[in-house]
Length: 150
Length: 341
Image (cartoon, rainbow over all chains, first blue to last red; front, side):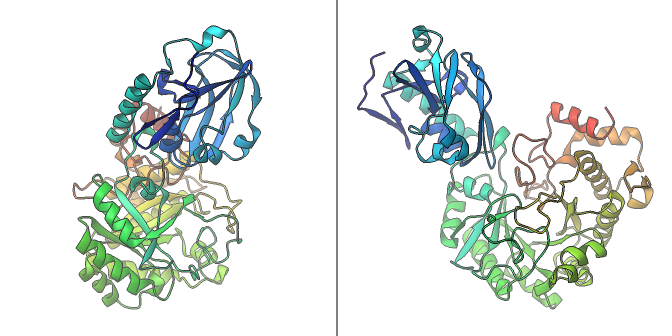
């Protein structure tokens, strides 16, 4: 996983630091960042903005399966499940973010939700985890168009 | 930051005008902007259930009908309504009980009439209305629908929760007098009476109030009680979903002239046990689904414009008021709530 650690992709009003991967499966909008032998999972700027100010955030699974729900978010007018990009085991939940979910709105790329020990290294190399900026840009542009249709 | 230069907006309006981030669960679309006059001294009333009450515990939150109502400049609201409001049909300007509220409402109604294409409702504070002429002036300014939040179904509850029981200024008889004035000024069914289900009334009492409003020439618009933190009624329970469904269905039958309150039968606890229509009519009404949608002022197409998405419950909960037509799955659940599955 070669990442362009210094760069940030900007699509519309949304920013995507390229030091991490973005999960487009199930239109999940979950980012994954390696930290030692664990992975941090959080919500990307598109979901953080479009979900609205979060009032509730709860982690619902300890064992993660790729494409399966692991958490719920809720704002005043919107509710959604969060889907895991990887299989693995939750080793830590960010208590600060659980107590104040609006940290996700304020700093989506710092407010990680769970720390995960992946089942294997292969978990980070499937095609629905995007690292290439052009692929990421194309997906986010589609998502922006989809949101405008709503 | 006070009205008329500033107004509070519902969270749904703030999202729609892109003043707040967010979107609506299940793709709901807001069709009416709800605006609230704002003053540094707040509302002079002290209603036991209301987030605006002067008796609310300070610092317990600033919610009103469950959500935040952020304050923005009126200029900005108007500009954004014209830019982002392609799905908006109506604006509702809501008074609070404050000595300046009437004049400021007139100012705002005139501005929205002149500067936007939106149809205009006013949700008035009857306590400030001293004559029918005051309502006529609102109509001349550009409002063509008028709402009156009676809220409580019985005079006893009204007096206890809004009147003498709370050292509040509101009086039941005057509210209904103003309903009559409003119907005379705005015309039959261009007036709405807001009623909150779950304040302690029985279904029989609520539906008697619905029938009274309808017979007076007003539509009854239903709200489900939601406890506001810090209000006197913060510990009061929300109405059961079965209760709310029965009231919604019966209200709709009354409004469609399919039944009258007097045709319905009630249990000793005041619950509806017979809606006064055949099972076939009930099935048709449930299948149509509109009975369970949010009740509110109409848009140009004659359908409800004031649809208040997720105004009475958290998104993801069972919806009391659907801001869109219920899906087949929703209707299956509604039949269960009504004991008709």
